[in-house]
Image (cartoon, rainbow, N blue to C red; front, top):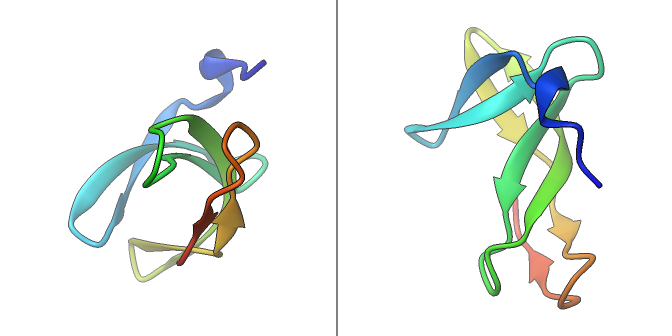
Length: 65
C-alpha cells in the first residue's frame, strides 16, 4: 500500500506533473495499461524529472521510461 503522505512535492515529467517524494527520490506514476499507481525511481535534472522503465505490480505491463 502506498503512503501518499510521503509524496509532498510535484515533479514535471514529459510536461505532466506527478507527486514526488524528495526524500526517497520516488514519483507516483500510473501504469499505461491499467492505471495502477506505482512508485517509480525518479531523477530530477535541471528541474525536470526522468523515470526508469517499470513493470506494473498489478497487471505485469512493462512501462517504458
